[in-house]
Amino acid sequence: MSDPTLTRSSVDGVTLLWDENVPCGVTLAFTERTGGVSEGGFSSLNLGDACGDDPAHVLENRRRALAALGCGDLVDELVNPKQVHGDHVVVIDAGGEVEAARVEAREGADAVVCTTADVPVLLCYADCVPVVLVAPGGFAVVHSGWRGTIARISGKAARILADVAGSSTREVSAYVGPHVGAADYEVSQELLDRFVAEFGDGVRGGGRCLDLGFAVLAALEDAGVPSRGVVDCGISTVRATDRFYSYRASGGACGRHGAIACMRSAGDVTAR
Image (cartoon, rainbow, N blue to C red; front, side):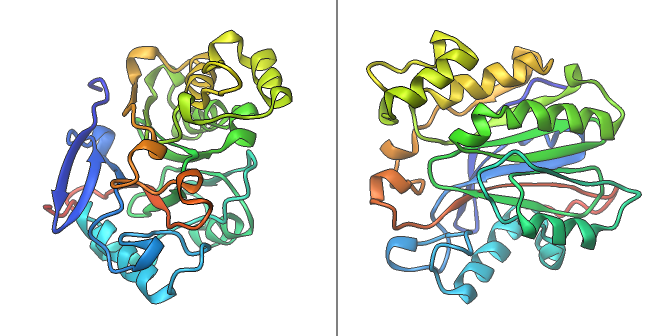
């Protein structure tokens, strides 16, 4: 498997950061906020259904995002967990019931591991760290806020993915999407000290600022994911509100961009 890369491109007005190589048959992308139908603070491609936007707008936005990824025929198969800032990982495997996993995800989860074809997975963000993991035979989508990050949810998901897919964490590639940058994330001294105790001084972003991205990368490395298999887009959502939503920059009222992944059946990949 080639080293992961992220390319910015636009499909029918929807702008994506994605790996055009489709690693291991997995189509994956981080969406930007343009190309949708939402209005006001949700403008325009809001994919979150729990932030106060019109549900009809959210549904249309999700349809457009999936279509841009070549998965427009799978809207009804979408798995979108209720994110609760924990470290629960839902598994959708070939021998399990997709509907049961979907119900479990809606009850509360912050990561989904999937080894089943034609089941798209979406998680939503507005400063937290989005992570997509890919291995031969499957993928995972992870929401890593500070609680999930200190619980090492990305490393946990990488281990579960490797186990379910029958691979090794050395074969896992990781994509880290736009999130609040270290210079923009000031926290309490108590929380910063907790992260330093868990991950070392590298999580210090200066003053009382916390580098969540450093902690995520450390958790992945400790789980066995090789550094050459990790790509970080390096964008702070707080400083790029023209492209991404930021809870901090907007004072708490905003939409959500997304991380989406899907492993298509052979011959079912739709041209973009």
